[in-house]
Amino acid sequence: MKFKVLIVEDSKVSREHIAAAVESVDGIEAVATASGFEALKLLPRQRFDLIITDINMPDINGLELINFVKKNPNYRDVPLIIITTEGREQDRTRGMALGAAGYLVKPFQPEDLEALLRRFLKPL
Image 1 (cartoon, helix red, strand yellow):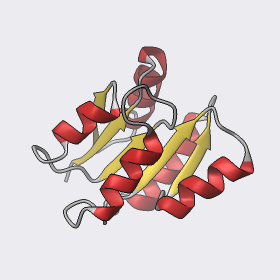
Image 2 (cartoon, rainbow, N blue to C red; image 1 turned 90 degrees about the vertical axis):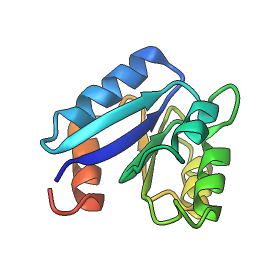
Image 3 (tube, rainbow, N blue to C red; image 1 turned 180 degrees about the vertical axis):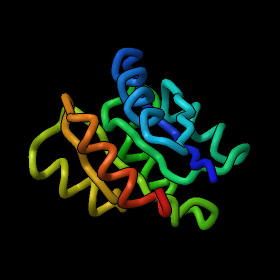
Image 4 (cartoon, rainbow, N blue to C red; image 1 turned 30 degrees about the horizontal axis):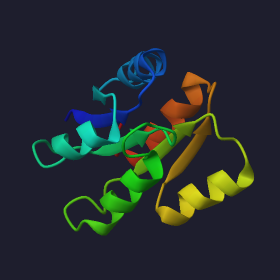
């Protein structure tokens, strides 16, 4: 079984880094978008097993995206991981309160992301 992970990240370098880390895990395909708006257009068209999002993005930020996903019955059970430069505890608390399942601060270790992927995508 192949899992599909949606990556929502406006920085091209970060998007490529996250996608490489995700696809280094056997059985996972990454689909990357550059904005929350693009992600909202993709969600009804494809099934995703997990979503990774940044917080700071120009059109729809990551917190708004999480809020939308968690309120929508079609996507509310999809685990979300935040990967961001926002390392303050209040940012982490806010993201988790909205429904994020994991939180990594950039720069992150690929092994930390892999551990989260393995926790939320069963069986890997």
